[in-house]
Length: 349
Image 1: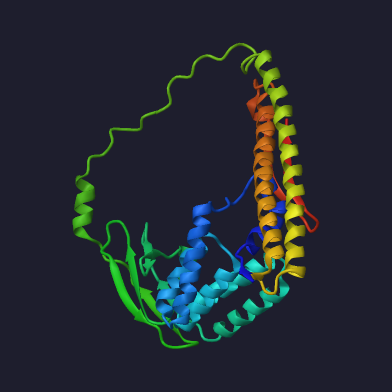
Image 2: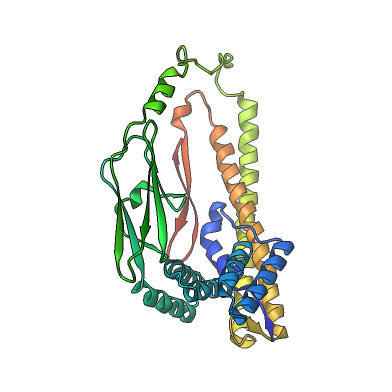
């Protein structure tokens, strides 16, 4: 039996039928990235077997960043839980459940969801309370900026000490260290009103001030009578818009066909030739490889299709008589539904 780490590719390809038609795609890893991810995964498994969990977790995390896969995500979450990083493990299991959900793998989703639910009961939380926020206040937790929307919320954190810092222009910085209080408990760090920093205020007052506003825009050259770049330019752009739109439609159709092929081959491999998500016989490995190749072609088709459709719309709009530019407006956005997706184009001319 051969280990294979490709399930997330085909699952992503199915999701692409909805999202990539808007021209958004995630690049496939290069051959070197895939090889490095495989080597890191195996090294992580060997370290786990040797009981070196603290060294194994970063290997799984690095492998997942290079080439995301459900199996790697699961091993990362399990490793984090075993070293006591409950909040990180909880988030990792939730991500594994989300990956399985996107792939339509209900059993794996339920398994990861159960592990996350068990961990949620043990979470320790930290609240950063800001009573009087100064202008330009920036709050950091363990060096990372804490969004203002998270102030006052009891957020899950790994057990141990956590450093909270607050800075603002013209104010003296504040810092404090908090120790978590055990499973199910919440610790609060309150940031007081920051004191004025006389040295910073003096430096700001001594800084030279600009003489006045300067209009950076050069004088615009006179526009030709009739607006735009002439009827000939508008006609050319309009013709090109239909060409680009045709290329876009062809790209979306091609992406859809190869996406369906990838899904069919992946499902056949899992149903007939794979014992688990990572153990397949030779035929199963061949089918999964074929599925990944089809998924890559699907990606290209959707990218080309999205670019072609967007370019076609832009060319068509600019081909209109621009004597009244405010009269032409177009909005392109993804449209998702229960049976499929694509592009929604709204506008007025």
